[in-house]
Image (cartoon, rainbow, N blue to C red):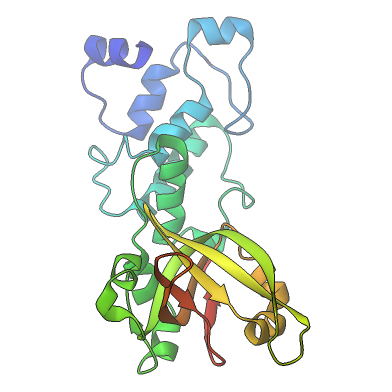
Amino acid sequence: EYIVTERDRGGAYTGIENFIHRIFRYKLKKYSYWDDPDNAEEAVKVPVNARHVKHMILAGCFDRIEKVGAVTERCALLERAARELGFSLSEKDFPQDMRGRHFFWSQQQIAVSGIGSIDYRRIFNNSEARRQVKGKASYLTLDEVARDENDGRRATVCATVVDVTEHTYKDRETGSRKRFAKLTLSQNNRLAECVCWNDYYMEHHTVIQSLKDRVVILTAVIRYSDYNGCNTLQTYRNSLLFIQS
């Protein structure tokens, strides 16, 4: 309401600096960081703080007036906003090696607004993995993995690992229990399961156990699962795995 009232009073905002100067004109304080709290008097006088500005930038509220062409350009807006508010961006919250990555900013937008999507095909196209998997497995979306006609194909997928679970099965030859892992993969609203069989899981155990909430590119074979009633992904001996975040 405060932001809308100021816009009605002084006209449309022309940029991030103009927004900050007008919204915070009665609040002379310089912030130490985005989450620096206001005291009770400050909060009443100006019910907008640095965290609100950060969330508005991440949600894309300034994209039109700042002519932002890609979500990665929001980093420059954050830097300008932080400078006006009296601090600089933290390496912990915005690592240098992530600032140019499309999916990182898409994740930030989804986290603060619940709106948006990650362009997994773009992540794959811009990755080193693309060259290494060429000729070994075609890139498929999780929607394509689910299609009946793709049962038996080798696929390269890029997705977020939303869960990692360990299971065991009884080996038919030895009778011993063997461990394997199941990865739940997500591409925005589409989910798929990837089974990492014992040999592959044991060879990459530490890495696989660290994959939760990370974006990966992997090669696997598509198999119909009677247990799941749909196609799943399964690792094979030479499956490739690349961690992107």
